[in-house]
Length: 130
Image (cartoon, rainbow, N blue to C red; front, side):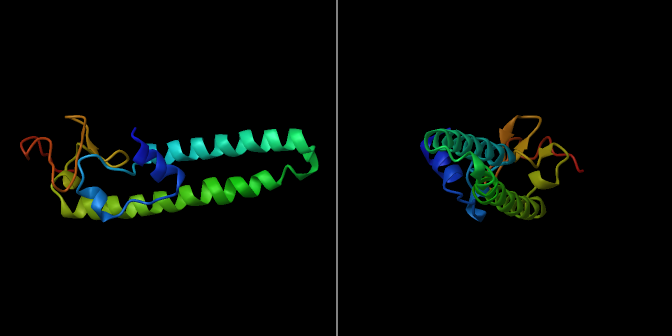
């Protein structure tokens, strides 16, 4: 994973429709979950350190608000945008109508390669309807 993908995940950036034209999609289900894990672990680690240092144990529930606003809500929005983009991708491309297309990772199960609107791994030779 390169630094641009890490920045996209940590900065809550959502993929645009241009993500379908690149050979490697930026936002997939795995990248959304990875962002959840990274942001949650950072918040938990920082809250433990801050609570220990300042002895703020009675304010532990603030962490729940941070987890919602910095972890859960952005991930939910990313997942909604991802599903909308994949639904559009399925309607517009040959790979989207194939039974070997995996929505969650935007890849072909047979060739184990990411598909895009510009790149079809099998060139249509292994296409099977859903």
